[in-house]
Length: 175
Image 1 (cartoon, rainbow, N blue to C red):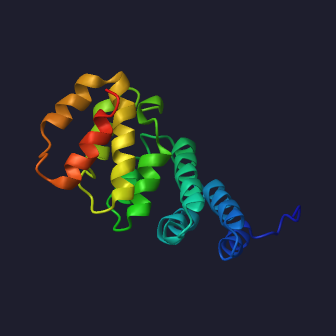
Image 2 (cartoon, rainbow, N blue to C red):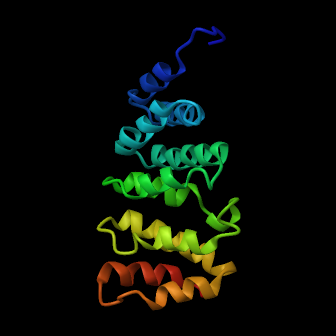
């Protein structure tokens, strides 16, 4: 392992093919560590790790994405954040929403909570309940510190849409 010639990317890919979720989590962690300096690692996380069926690996994907944003800088990561949030795979979108929680505790979003609310809210009616749960929980977190901003957003929602109503209930839970 101490060999400087070790190809960490290849090792991470191999770990991600292993049957144990622990190996998948470790492979995801390594890819996350590589991602700020290796675009192929970031793309592999987005396009391949997001398809892993284990929820623990998906949690590690969220952490890996946050590591990438933290290392690059949250403001400088905005384009990548938007790209991942527009991806067709709900796990990719969820990695962003979960990874950056609590959004308004992160640099840039602390000063720009409205941006966080807008980015997250776009997924209020997504077909994936798994994703909508993350949206509702993330907005509920923000609602605690920025009630007026979230309430303004919620006032625009069409609660006749059952997916939106589901997310709304999560945001307002315990409020």
